[in-house]
Length: 490
Image (cartoon, rainbow, N blue to C red; front, top):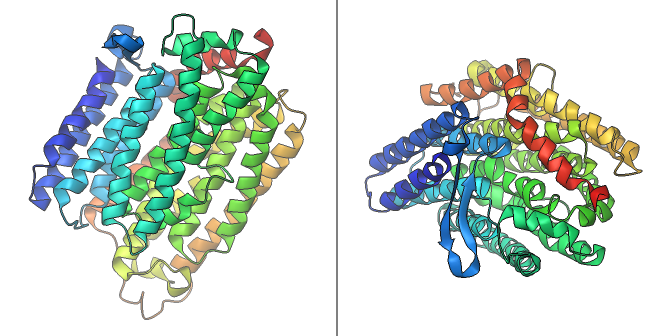
């Protein structure tokens, strides 16, 4: 029943939120719903070995042989926990933000959380697709109604990309459904088709799914919607998009692409990996040239997601384990970075790096917390991202699924160096050096903002020092996925 409550609580909270007109009441209601969801997620983690409470399989669309099949394996637990902890953190971080029709805004945020939870717990392809759309639709309205001056153009591009990707995935789902023995949408039935579909079928089906997931991550060349949407979206929506929603694409590859179409994944693995590497290098070089904090963080996210996708196609134990822990770490780190960008923009009404400087003298607490989050973003040892990226590099280098493993490893290593360059350069220009008239009267962050960033920093250091619980949580999932991805079994 735990996965059902993870969906129902934010869903009910979101629907009720539309009737709340007072701004403060809307904030309190959304925070309460998200905290209750977090408590349910923690309960699921404590009941990790009790499958009776972690899986539910009941009648849904009997005429299509589609069931309401939801469950929490290790990967689902990790991503649901990220979603559960991410939303209250976002609500608290943006507490001082005033939205027109605040009840509608926070209701859409909770509906998006319900959709995300549904995506991560679905074990039925049609149900997965339903929640995939449920998670995206509220974000479209959040961006189009509460975004910046160019929000209409940005959200239109976002809609076109995601709509076409979703349509392609739906075609692939229906095709596989008709080739299952039982005409079923269950994950087990989809995985059994791997022995029936020819290499030709798996080859073109791979691209139907991969493009849909690549748009969501995003991966080069399907990334062009992302910087504009991140720039124009309201802060809370940007944090959801970058910290949590991009994980839908990675999750889709791990759950619904690689194990279902292993031969197609192997046939196109080098091509997909090359796209990942190209995007990483491209995004890193563009990030180095940015004067806009939002765009810098946006391109940084593209580079890090590209590394995670590259490690998936390496098809190795260490690489996949690194991806699992990095799914959580990237979300925490990027929400921390977006929080700092939001606080700077709110106080100074600018995101331009060239217009800032010397903030550490006036806001030392913010400077210290940002430095720790930024160092985690470049995977400094003893921060959470280090162990994940180390395992991913090890997995990419030791991969036998490609003959270009050394090339991919070197290219990825170059991107890590570039990330250190642009992150440290950003820290130096924004927080150190001489103050200017704009920043000379800067104030330090308030209590709620300190709480959010301190929580993120504690998670960064705790996971960096002791990541074992995350490995224990996802080990069985990694083994299962790799066994399904082994194309030699065909």
